Image (tube, one colour):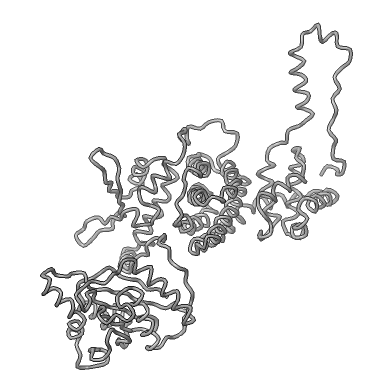
Length: 571
């Protein structure tokens, strides 16, 4: 059940005309009062043909007129309006039940506290099966104004109790971290202009897309302007940036003026102070485009940054910072991913935006590595190879699962649900990313004897998951990747243990696929050759010994070869 308190109004008669009228699409049927502050003697134009809307408005506004005449200061914000709607799947509620629900909501809001005979006047009008409208005039019978501070939180709590008591769909408790829902006017405007999204949703997507590209607030404003967004910056006398508002091109008011929205009104984490805290949280370093000669690609660096994410979740401020930065990495990956993955990655990024913010204050500096990885990805000129992208998306799946579990442990219901939605999109992207690799590996399986040895390695390295791995359709591909890694000098048993340690396999849908992406990442480079390293060291030492001493040596150096694995023929 949703109760949406509207901004205060000034025209009681006008709101009644809407509630008792046909509606915008003739959807209002049989409008009538189901509850009110004093049902006896109150006119109801829906049930009494002699009652008028003007009469009802004057009845509700009586304390307002009295206050205005006595105090000489006209009250102009006295109309309190709160639609209350049941979920589509909820059962039919009778008039009596809706009346009880309305009473509980006005009590929770502070409109009519229990037992207060001098409370505000109010009514609940029903004109559809699934919702009512509560209208109140916020001047009490004694002329005072009601205490409505934080009424939205109290009404939300009351709705959660009503859902439980009436057997209705249970919604999650609000925490004031959600983005504002588009109004009906905004949705109708978008539909009229042929826009897929209302303006504030459209602006939110573009603001989030800009963040990985910039390193300070001035760059952020310049990036938005270059992206074609209308920007109004608020500056102090010194020229320092104090705030910003953005507008969608073509979004004009009735005077043909550009409509602007402040960042904090678009989403709580998009205010200028919060964006500055995130952008300026890193240590001084070169711009991402200036980095040179890094031994791995940005895609591999991002995977390595994600590998250590879960180790810093013991501290709540650090955990919140890592989750916010994870959202930026998701956004950056979606921007530079191939077309066949971009849709799912963008959907995951959009869903995860709700999980990026909570009431816990983030220690943004703690997430420097993840944020740097996001910036490196958006500034890289080349796309990822298939294995690097598959490893990164798989790591994103696990990191998002970890983030969701942390939110669940903290009872952040909305954020945990957002993380679960993001995981669903990421898993689809991971399947697409790994498909070419699986096809290649499956086409060149190792010989049966080698596969049997690899199966023994799996039973030894991860005994609790061995049977699920060996029954996974991707097991032949895993055997092939183990053979490739062994050819590069790695020990399969050790690689398997390391891969399982990075990502628990109990919740993995297809554990063999998880191991493939991990081993592709960790085993992509040749393992150090101990024999060659010993020979190189001996040669270096010999070059530093005087020739006379070398001639006087009586015995040559003996190199002991490392034991070799004696079990399999070449493929």
